[in-house]
Length: 298
Image (cartoon, rainbow, N blue to C red; front, top):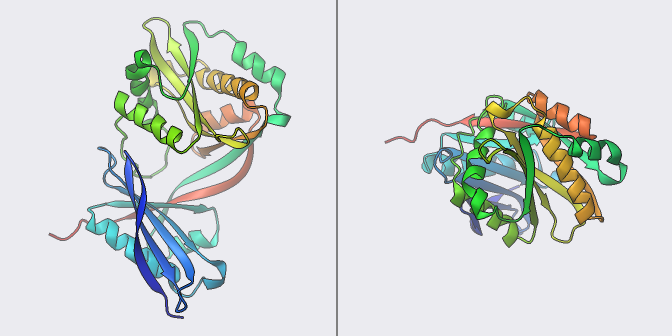
């Protein structure tokens, strides 16, 4: 079968990335596959590209995926990218496809869900109410309050040393403008962003945070976006405290919500222990693959 690969214009963008798109179609013009390539644009990550490749099951093993991948890798190299990453199910056909084309497995992730109807509410309430001397919890919906924006941006440095295997994510540079931009992206697509943070009472700075994005209609499942505690504040149980309070608030605000979703690197043992203690149940595993590109010829 002859396949035509057509580059398209993707109007979707954000302050931190832009996307390229290719559509594969057969001789009748019917779509048989697609590829999205996200090109990160912020300092510290502008070497990175992330791809999402889909081929119709009936059209696999006919070269469509290879053609799409070839176009995307060429575009990434032309744009000066040195790293291309992709995620697929652990042990899946997609994993075999990527391995056969020079990608290497760099990270294993476990996805988990907390079913709110089955949550141990007394235990969660106890976790959330337990005092943590020297710290207090604050929370907000949407954009961070102006008086906390600077220290909230600084707290994102807690993510810099998260166990991420050999993945070359670079280092995201966060400032007050970027945290406001991130909140705006969630708001503009109609979802709801909630944040719980632990404040160091000695100086009023944010020691850690956890973020949750809830569908705009308050149904279905919400997604944890990130949880981090700055290194000097670790070992005090802040992550479990913040997450327990997030769960408590979410049940009150959104009684029709089904559950909370999270994903954690298998090597991130402390966060996996937090999720286990709060009742999250594993649902599936994925593998992150990485292709290292040679510099573009001069």
